Amino acid sequence: MSVRLAVEQIAERLGDRFGLLTHGIRTALPRHQTLQGAIDWSYELLSAPERSLFTGLSVFAGGWSLDAAETVGAACGLTRTSVLDLLTQLIDKSLVTTSSATEGSVRYDMLETLRQYGNERLGRSSRARTVQRAHADFFVASGGGGGRRVGRPRPKPSG
Picture (cartoon, rainbow, N blue to C red):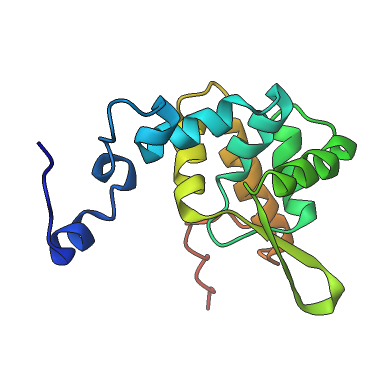
């Protein structure tokens, strides 16, 4: 028996992409039955270093630069020089996208569904805090924060 939903009901459930699409044709291969199954299958095809970078990059909401990827990649145990090659492989496998940015640089991004999947995987790993800290430190250092910690109030001027 199949359940049918109205467009409005589907729209209400889109926040939980993996919970919405949980059943498929029983005779189909598992990777063809659900969104979760399709992404699991693609993830399992990645090499260990590709998986590591993919999950590490999921900390970026809204894209990242090569420098940012290299910083997070180092937190994933990858060498700076290997990050570009691995990033290229993830692009070739359609897990990462590119766009031109100002000043001749390239920005990288991930579809939100893939980012959520990677972030869930990262959250279950032992290196989640290390990667999140590297991500935060990169932006504090590059954002002109003057070494100030994110989330802490500025000291009030005396006088």
